[in-house]
Image 1 (cartoon, one colour):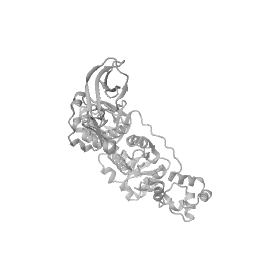
Image 2 (cartoon, helix red, strand yellow):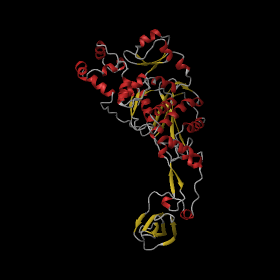
Image 3 (cartoon, one colour):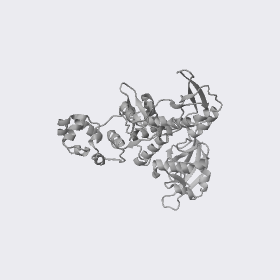
Image 4 (tube, one colour):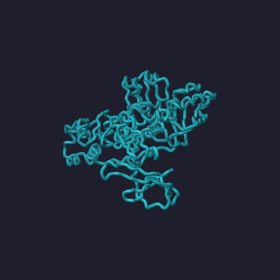
Length: 485
């Protein structure tokens, strides 16, 4: 899966801006500084007048009426890609960011069953990123190169085998391939327009005319050549920053950017499968009549771990109400150096709001989530069978709706033995030296040759454990049924 973020610079600005009209109504350009400044990104208002990414800034200014200019920050872009790579770890353990291309690759072949298929997984990824304020283009294919190409072309096809991939790529124009200008011109000169035209030609002739690089590109697209993608190594701590486009003079106005930052922290912690109990918020100030900055650090601790932004935001708002700002705020930084293992009743599986519903109320939702993730055949319910022998006292049923039916009443022997989950059959053991008798169990006397007659007893082994034993009256052999305590 290739997740492309073509509007990353503009979306990063929007995350720090409560008033969206500033980014949509007036032309705005994100500019790459240098000897020859160029347009890195342009909002919709600027594109309507003809401005395009990659255009020289002088040409863009010639056709725009006093646009707003924002300097491009490559380090901030790299940090955003790294943050989103951590978020996407919740969908795959193999994530590979490509910051310069504003793209993240995921190996999702092993995740398809967990999320209900590749199409459902794609929508889960899209919904997660859109919830953070990003609008990705997503491509899925059998090779990283093909996934990149489908993402760029906004092609929704999901070719899962080699023949389907070849059919999907055949109508792709050659202009969209990463080819040199000389190779592209040479292919156009002999009448080739689509990738399918190229695939029908003989490989030796292509190599002779255009060199081995063209064949290597085709092999990468079709998955014939392995492309090594290093795994993303997430940072050991949470460290998120947000630069504000306008100064904030009152703590009440921090609610919007802080909520964005907390949602980002929640998504990243879900990807890392980590939790936290405390965090530090750093408020960055610009001092009056100076170009230096200072900061105020505020630490907040909770009584129990949690990652939900909806739980942290009211706590931060209450804490910030007591804070008197000594200077306007121009940026936020959220840090947590001590990340914890998620609690046993985490927000991802057992409940949407951990700790609030009682366990009995959570059980149907738990079963539904497990069944959706793992498949119905992976979940079984244990029901009483009505057979007094402990190893046969329970049946495993795949239909979860059987909870609505009344199970058989326990037999007198089951009442005596108690309720247990038996994971193995009785094991033969040597005759014990000292036993305390418990009683006799007889079962199956109506089945010819299948009757069971046992004398149960309790004994202790050399480690002092209390063994639950029985002697088969048919063979005289002793067996260990289980352990007490």
